[in-house]
Image 1 (cartoon, protein in one colour):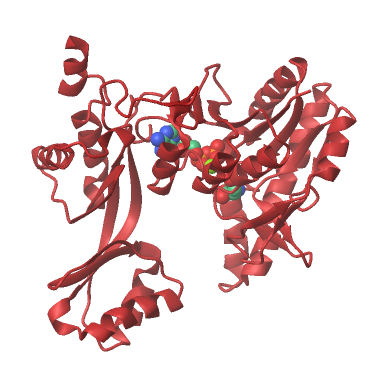
Image 2 (cartoon, helix red, strand yellow):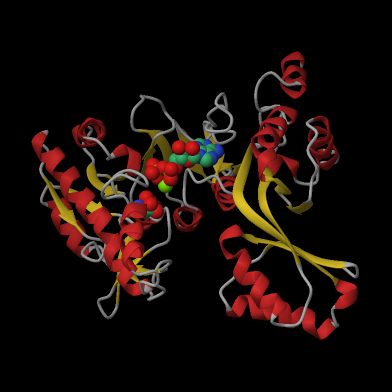
Length: 417
Ligand code: ADP
Ligand code: ASP
Ligand code: MG
């Protein structure tokens, strides 16, 4: 009998009405003869009583510096509460179910509290309950260290739980249920008519997730990819096939790199960034190394790094901009920080080696009256930094310029082929 893992995000478990939809999806898997593992997130988003952000704020109201270990203990409760309520809902629908915390489900992690990595999964306990004919509901986002401390897997980490269990159990598929009907060509909050991508590769979704498409956690994709477990992103509230994610090979042959006539698959964004800039003429070369070492020592990760004989520029999360400024000034260096920035990226394996993509991007930004502050690229991504007030406009401009909104010249060219 095949195993299926179904993961339900915060908005899919926040009301009893939503949880009844969850029960329908689980019933349909069980009725089709599958053994079913259900992974749940904490109920709702910031402001909802048992959501992760609500629990974080609860601790911070009393004391700003809760230790990472204790914060993990607290926020793991959000998923535990949710798992019991979801299992109760399943039982109310006549589905025999039981609950395991992440640790009880055999998820063993390192002790990097707040962003722990899964070391291994010991699925025996879970498999025993499955073989008794039960649906096992697992609290997502958490694990346990070898010494018994509860850890969490980083924000959005219930997807990682689902992928890790899918791999450990040899699942046929891991279904990620959320509030949108699949992976879209842009965040539908910014581009309401973004279309759903029916099929994509692990590599592309991974790149999208790293560049801000939070519909799935990048680590979940990396884990599923290692063992070739298919992922399907679907909507809890709507019947639709969603997005199937697999390798970009079918019957041993690669997919064409440019699909639907479009080199770009999606536009992604990351808000709330700050640009850090130093004039290189004022920095002795040995201090360049010191600069990045000092930032690493205080736990600041840098992105869009550009080191040239004229200047050093890079991007940090706005939440650590003050810390970055203090750290750099402590080295005796002058620095200018531009807060209120956002990163907008085009992602697509079809742009690999294709001339003209950068020109089209810059033309679109110019036509929209948007100044690009900095760019960075990889073989399947081009990113640009803009002021946050231009974020929505920039995402829409690129979505249209690369033919993703079905109204643009590229889409027309395609129709005329
Ligand atoms: P869940 O709680 O179900 O894990 P998340 O909030 O983590 O849900 O992820 C779903 C959200 O991801 C959607 O509501 C949507 O706004 C956002 N999102 C960002 N980029 C994309 C994209 N390219 N396709 C689909 N959704 C996206
Ligand atoms: N509840 C956790 C979070 O909000 C994990 C998740 O939802 O995937 O980050
Ligand atoms: Mg999520």
